[in-house]
Length: 136
Image (tube, rainbow, N blue to C red; front, top):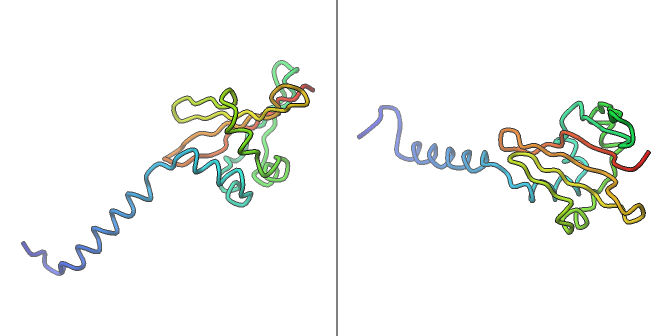
């Protein structure tokens, strides 16, 4: 069957193009995203939800809460994140559907210093909450 105005090579090109788009739109794995996010501050800045919810001082009830701009988040958060430390401790990772919480252990206080909450939105991961878990 011939489609008026289309030649077979055009249809083939469109088919390949749509296949590539579907592959590109597939959900990214958290592991691949996090390694890139943790090591590349510029990439990380593109994956921070603004304003970023920041919880401070766990001794306060309710916890003190701030909202940071992307600029503030990139400036105030410790970079690069300690990928090996975060990945190496099973208790530091909590996965719930499209949400991953990573907690960074601090050997000096024998507790968690920071937690990062990531959510997948439209197949793409974003940092949506940062918690400073160090005692005030």
